[in-house]
Length: 130
Ligand SMILES: [Zn+2]
Image 1 (cartoon, rainbow, N blue to C red):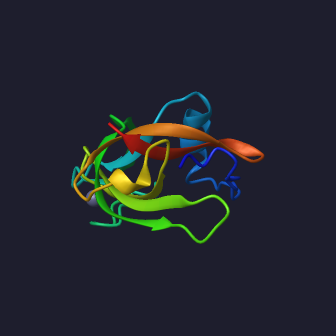
Image 2 (cartoon, rainbow, N blue to C red; image 1 turned 90 degrees about the vertical axis):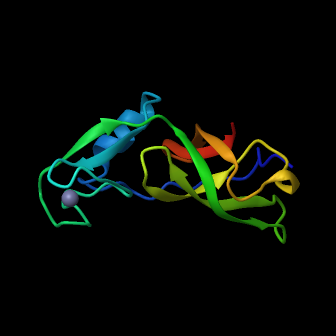
């Protein structure tokens, strides 16, 4: 049930997301917030996707969220669960659910952030049951 041996690829960062990966390497989870409309978005962008303001800034996130939807991939050597998780801060991110029995997953379940090592890159944000 655990996907310990599943390799997590890391795709090269870009200037917009580099601070996120730098923070992740230190175990910190940060998100991008627009100071014009006060909304948080994912993935991190310099321009707010809601109001197109360029006044966006980094802020720490709680790492707490809820499963919005999920899908368990079982036809692989190492089954894994992909999910949309809605963060406490209000934005929804595509991620993986790890370190739990996939049969017990439910929409609406509380989850919390865990960073998982990637191959040749910084840790990748994923979630496990809270
Ligand atoms: Zn905005």
